[in-house]
Length: 125
Image 1 (spheres, helix red, strand yellow):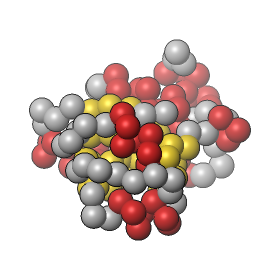
Image 2: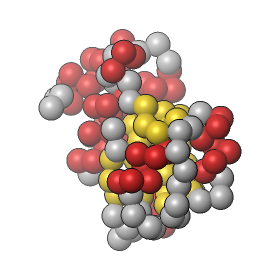
Image 3: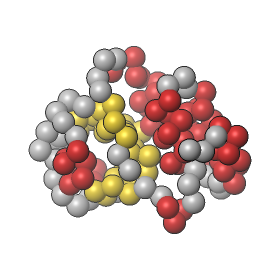
Image 4: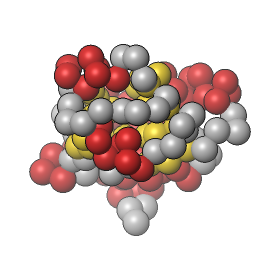
């Protein structure tokens, strides 16, 4: 597990200023789940997280919060309603998920998370 200092150093090496701001925001959160999300976001590009919709459908349950610290890809379909939080979405995935999932960015969810108290959260990598 990467320490807070290691995550901070890796974030400093990222070129995208939005990614740097996001990692800083995640480190300020008290819940350990956000530390894990930050750890996945600062990975090198060759180890970036990309998850297909079919994997999300297989692992998730109805009315659950799913966090993807990377990109959601197009393959598969979703059979139940979920709240999906991800760093990025492919265009095809956005089109498929528009009806079945409440899609949010990680930053938006952190701002609005009080509305989602008591709902089970899960990270999919």
